Image (cartoon, rainbow, N blue to C red):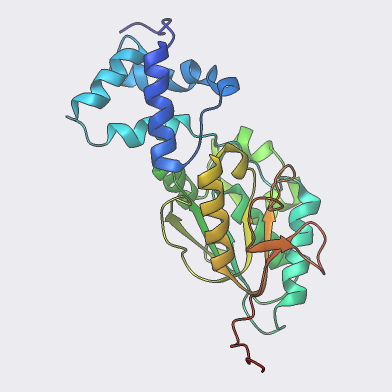
Length: 279
């Protein structure tokens, strides 16, 4: 087996991969992201001992391996994440939900598209440190491999160094010499589930939903569908947090900027009371 594959995907293969990604996740492989294909596919090509991306397309289309589509999608997804990403933003999210939920109640949180789980763990640390009731955090992602990683609570030294302060590292993690493992106390407040934002029903009702840096990868119809589902999943008074470059304005009539919490979105409550006809 050669160490590297040098032949880039053909235009036809690129179209197949793009169509597969959009069909499975609603995400589009924009023209300015196709350069990632060659790099992203290399580990899978090496593992399967395939000479090029076009051979991977042939393997996908022959239908002999029903898992191959999911494996391709997994490597094409952008799983960029880190601990305490935009720290001030998630600290504000914890403060906002604490103020909105009764003091004795457990907040219900949904960390959507959480990749390998650094975001829900960051939330769990913040909630634990503020002394209130432990939250009930649901962490989801469309990627089965990302969810498998997240469930272990295990991170490399490189991953740990990305955003995790040393004080929190020492308080909440233990090391076996090569990896760091989140404490059982943190993991006990998080449940993990594979979930496709574009196709699956909402997994409950929540006081806070974080769905950051996902919408701009979606096609317009998929974006509208996802926002509709996120609105359905918000409890009355619940808050939605998107990525810094994302908005619901012009995208959904079911959500609007929060009137009390700057930078968050809330569900538009529709008055469904019957109108009294006069005359």
